Length: 407
View 1 (cartoon, helix red, strand yellow):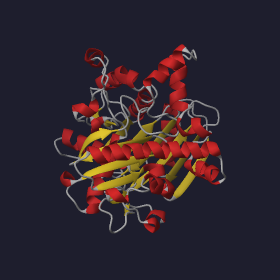
View 2: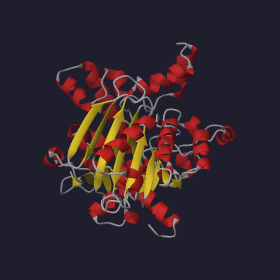
View 3: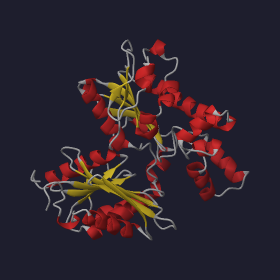
View 4: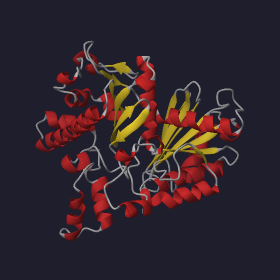
């Protein structure tokens, strides 16, 4: 056992064709190693592993997630880390949908696995992949506790008015239909960091968090508790995203089925993979879209304008839904890196006490920072998210608690 790895948590985030992993010390946040396996099950699969200041990328056949986990284990071994004997506190797993069953970190056992499988109908693109990662890790590290941390957990306690869809209540109850919300681990972590940055008690803060990545979501948080969020029963609802439509008229689905004769699966693919920014302009990378906008591309301009329009829509709704507004925070890939998006989202809102400082906004940085002007009544911040650290801390805390406080 190494001193660096004793008590560390190995975090897995398994997608349908990818596996991200990170070995992190939950107390200090020190990342010992991280990596990603891409295009699992396809030709051209590859892995990248970073440890001890060195990055290795290789093309390697990865027919399944278990192969990827075993290759990750070999990368660790090549760098002097024997995962089996490393003294790990836990393996933490991101699971997208907890349904009505799971709303806090949960030790994985056979029943938990069967229940996650049962509710996979609520997230057919995500939960099965998350399960593959869990089962692969349990095979590799059977003596290390596995903990599932659910994307929906933070939003479990949404007020009924925010969580309830206006459909027949018996149908909703029978089929577990409600607003679940997603990116909860990120929203919880970032809102907590906002309170730390401002030196204030979370109980006294009303804030909006904008998680803007390829997937995007907004949340309104009052006193440390979420009161609204843009994603719904699935991660498809809400803001315009990289490849997802966000909010649409539900009648559009019926129209596509009845008039365009698209099947349910074809509509699913259209709305999840061929919509959003990619559907509007053929690109979902914001750097490429910005370049196209600057070059005068009309499709890219429209895509960008639609994106900002929907973002401002949620900002307005949540600003008026909160009793007061203390802070607006941008996070995730686009939120942390696109000064243009931040500026356009908040343009002209001075009358609501939201004043951006152009120089602060334009300045690059990797740490939490204020980008509002000194005379802004509302704090505007950029706070990097760290879902892996949040998962690691929740996993380690649960395992310690289950052991009676002993690590």
